[in-house]
Length: 86
Image 1 (cartoon, one colour):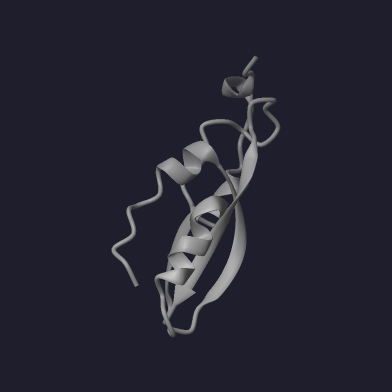
Image 2 (cartoon, one colour; image 1 turned 135 degrees about the horizontal axis):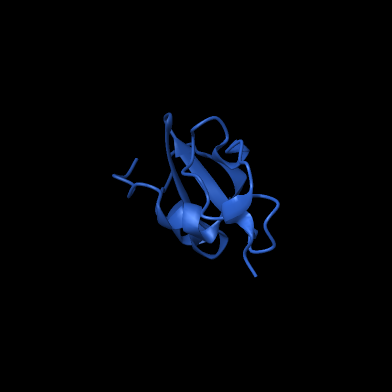
């Protein structure tokens, strides 16, 4: 049962404002992070579910890219702005 409404929060899960705040505080039992993949091309990046990363990378052709793992809650991922492409 969620008990985070009464918790003081430091919003550390936003990683300095880079990502939206989670609906649940990190110490709440409902706070569950998942691994997502960040793909960056020429300084522009997008975050996709790990299961979709290979398809996005395949569509890049010969472009150079970097890949990193980002841990977010599903609600944080859902509230990310839509990617405008690379």
